[in-house]
Image (cartoon, rainbow, N blue to C red; front, side, top):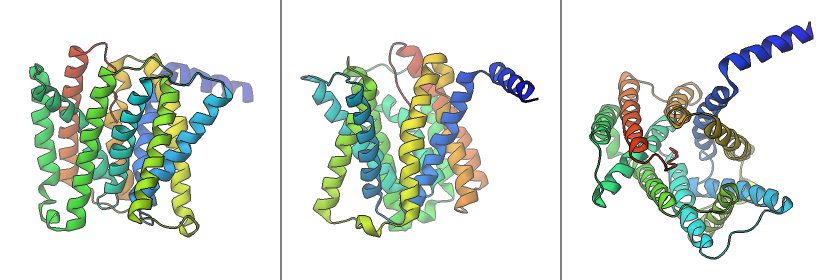
Length: 314
């Protein structure tokens, strides 16, 4: 009986495809990290939570590579690591975590997904030729964003809501700069080791900011729910899911492996409405669909024009 069940299970996995299952895992669980972040920042500042998460995750990565005796980066490679640590983790992840304290997790996830638009705009102002498909996708995404924010126009009069939006948008811009810098300064050393070092460095920088400003909660006063959220973000969000994400990248075509990015906001919006009673209205649903479709066109254009570039959607 057990043998039959095992064979049946294996058959279904083979029919679906393990890489596809990996992609679904990434799309779902990276979407849930917005919920974990929202839960964590209910009790402590977002910057402090990002600092703790990144410090622990980065330390675990570094310890692993120390045990496996992986070679350390050398010379100018450290410059690349530090710059990416500042752009991708200190600013982008730090600010997006801080921003979700003041806005819904679903809205934060949707804003985070629009970063390819900034890639297109930055490239345009650098004098690069922009494909018509990218322009079309950008315009469609802009229309979708307008639909989403139509019912939130009055909320912009609320200082906290306005702050959350500003922090989240800046986070997407810094991630776009980080993406373009990664493309320009592609490193030759272990990318996973680099990721751990970036997290660790950004954790130290964020702790330094917390210490300088005094905006933090004593570690002994942090409630258990926040520690659960941090543990989830470190273990599931950073370690497990990132590993599975790399597996999906290695075993699926780029146009398929990137689909997780369009699943994240959907998961965040749906779970946010269930867990935190966040508003799930027609404008958010319709605007979200339009925005994600526009982003899909933008990314299709980026892939066609830069086939050799590895642009990751956050």
